[in-house]
Amino acid sequence: MWMASRHACSSTVAYEVVALMGLAASRFRLATWSRVRIRMESLRRYLIAPPSGHAILMNGPWGSGKSYHWHHFALSLGDIGREPITLSVAGLVSQEQLESALFQASLSGIGSEAMREAASVIGRALLRTVKIEPNDIKLKSDFSSGKTVVCLDDIERFAGDFSVLFGFIVNLLDRARIHCVLLADENNALEKFGDEFGVSKERIVGRTIAVTPDLAAFSREVINGLEDQGTRDLLTRHINYIDSLLSAIGTSNLRTVRYFLMEAAALITDIRPADLNNVAPLLSAVCFWTFSESRNAAERSVAASVFRIGGMEVAIQTHVNRNSARTGSDGAIGRAALLLQECGLADEAANWPKSKAFADLIDGTEADTATIAEDFGLHAPNSMPKARALQATFNGYSQMSDQDLQFAIGEARALIQEGIVGDLVDLIELYRTLRHFRSMGFIAQSESDFDLEMRAAFSSYDASQMTCDQAGLEFLSEHHGAGGLPIWDTVQALATQIELREVADQNRRMLAQLADPSQEVPGLIESVGMFTDVDPNSYAAELIAGAPIATDRLSRAIRRSHRVSNVRSYLQEEAPFYESLANALEAQLKTDTPRTIAQVSVLTVKDQLSALAKMVR
Image (cartoon, rainbow, N blue to C red; front, side, top):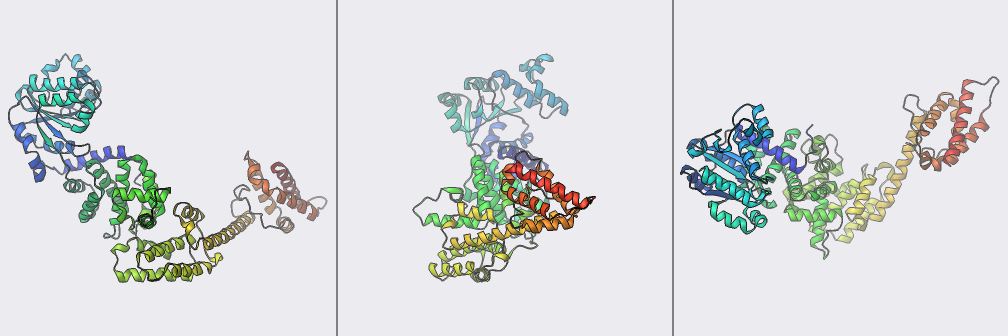
């Protein structure tokens, strides 16, 4: 299964390599992009002409596509008789390191793989070993011929004094007489190197090309480079929606766009959606995750909380924020609503389901793509509860017709009124959605009448026929502001009844398991509370009647508890029952002479119970 433990930084690098391989395989050439061709015409004219003693600068912010455009442009340089050498100066500090990096870059297309790998390690030392003078290098082309084009990337990330880099560039331009292309974020370079950069630029740069990202063209090229045909076709089918997402998010970083598209492609390839028309919520969810994480890694947990809460719940909070003097930024749901607004995807959030699996994916755990597919409605669910199915329908209400929306609202109200078998938390979330719809005017009823109707419905529920996700209920109370709902006191009372019934059912199951020879013996610590409603005298009679099998199983359970060093902290409240049961066994057991195996087993477990009671008191 596809693994999701990739972090944004490492993912971006890996995806960039994959995408570039795909693009190279498709023999993409610069001429296929008219807008890029126009932008690069100045660069082409500079390279066709003899070396002028000046470099040309491609300027743009990080992620704007400088390296990307240069990579594809360099593929066409053979058409004009030029040989490119590209190297990054990021982290380099000295003239020697720059020369070594240039030498290593010049080996990128020649020799065996072993030679290239060795050169990357040995670097300039290799020059001295083989007695080659650096000024005489003729590896890819003759530097004096004017055919070589050296591209220096990441100018603003050079770690040494700019005068060192300036001298290196001047040497390339004046001594080697070659064409030189510089890639830089000029604003960051000015901030880092100050006036030294400005003065040096005037000396070595002839023309500056502003690089601005073409997100639409870039997205199409990344999608066309995907290996899986089905994924390519599906993303191409939704390319206009992808364009609208990128416009809403307001990014100019091509690396982040690639990160988004590759994550979306990986999920789609694994899921194989049954409904090809219903992938928009998944695409917008992946867009929100990847862009919020790329913007600030600390926002990853906030993005994950959106899907633990559910998009409709966040939409409700956003609506509350708009109609309240409070900022609504306190608590998980408030921060989630604020992040959605900042990312420009608040309107998309209502289409997202509550999906723990997707939240776990964002947090970096292995992707449970089957559950994600079911949560997003991309696979037909086998047995989705009616309340969840209706909630999933409401998540996409903005795409529904008025007639369909009113029909679904009627179904939801009827479901809550019936109080049939279901989970209490699912019904509460459905109620909150209906209450939100009422505030929007979709339900023609006053708030007081609506809440009175819902309170009556929840008050009529039979706790013995329902379940309750207690953790989910607690989360609702802490993060959704559900404690302020008019029906909350009714909900709490019902949840308490359900919990007591579920505990009693669990205790009965543990007792039945303890008595069943075909099942594993449960530990006393793992099944704390199973003797809560048990009468010691009645249970003693059952043990005596079932000895030695019943008593031997209880003896094994007692022995297991001795393996835990802090057993007292678990079983202290059980001590009175153990002591009472031991006394009942002693009082009820009638022994023969000689004793039977069953009688000995009863006496053994009696002594074990007494010792355990004494130990945990």
